[in-house]
Image (tube, rainbow over all chains, first blue to last red; front, top):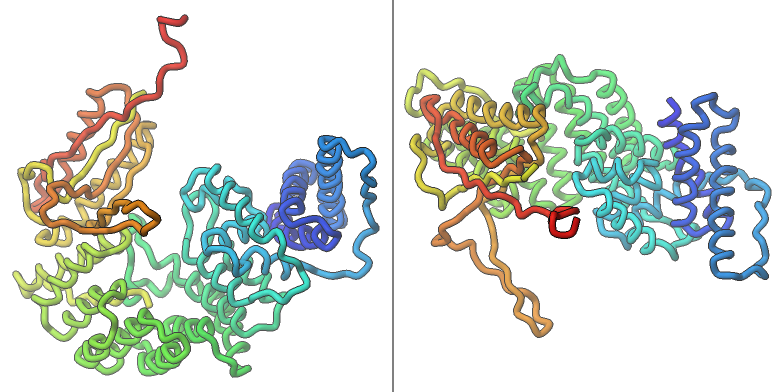
Length: 394
Length: 138
């Protein structure tokens, strides 16, 4: 498909222009124009050398813009830039464009926007649609981001960790509008994994694939959430799971664990269980111990407490939960779940209602309101209790 | 086409007829309510009258500038504050009558015992753009 090919080539073509001395923002604009032209010209047949075609067209666009700029400044004496021959060495600067898009000097929202445009080759309108903001707002965000990285050069090593965090942010945005951001994040992570020999990049790709595999089972047709324990595992995408597990095993074998690899390992253990009650919670707790040691994150401590509740019983889970910072989001929901499993239904019903009021999204609020209703119904009419499990996803 | 804001309140509106808190409904009643709200918005999208809608967290903070280069101060949430907005829907309709009709439908979303809640929704017209041409100048 031409559109995907074009978007795959986008960062490499920007890289060629920047290496020829064009500043990043100008290069990025010229390449976007070349993409637009390709979309119409290639309809009659794709060129033999798509990347060379894009470089040539983008370079011409840059020259046109540059000449117009020179004329406007009335500097005819300025030496006319001649297109140099194509790159003498075959350098692929795609990775450098990844580093620029997610430059550490950018705020997360700016890095996300710039990465989707410069690396992902999406138009400003598509990015604006995906994030539900006006196109003019997104255009400003991108243009400010480009100014921030204007002085960055390709000669310094980039920060891979920042790139991974930006891709994970994109992945977690899911999909709205006509762009599937989760699929886009996976595409970019695949590209990045092909450019680097890094365990955490592989770990992130594996984590995304394993989560994406569950997506068909994660929501009902009406949009409501299905907890992990209740998902129809027959609807999980086994190809994605197999690919994710293979990538993860390759990374873990090199024994340089990082947080994405460990999160992927936990996701893989869930994927490996044919039924929810066959989940290897003891191993999952062990991975959470490692993840907690790596990150010190209170969110990880919360998820670990839920896993302890599954491995060693609800009382043990509540004991682990006692040490978790009360301000961590979803702590109340986890507490409700553990109290329910410990048989303390009145407390559980109240906590589910509290958690629903504090939920940060509608799907979660609806889910927790239903849980409160279900437990309360069980209290009023014990025979009506469904005995359904209430685990959060991960 | 005038635009209207439909406001739903956590508190501050007069009591609904079927005034049972959602936490005390059955799971089926919760599902029926959510389905009704979703179908309502979907139907308005089909008729070309839906603009946007969102829900708000009950948490909130009051903020004001202190001036003099000092950081703003925050306060609240205030329990005694009468008005607490839960969410809104913006509709773009032919007339005020149509807006009232739609607000009435939304107010009849099912609640406890599957009965309509008959809650009070606030209907607020948007101030409009000045017309491009008026009879005074044309």
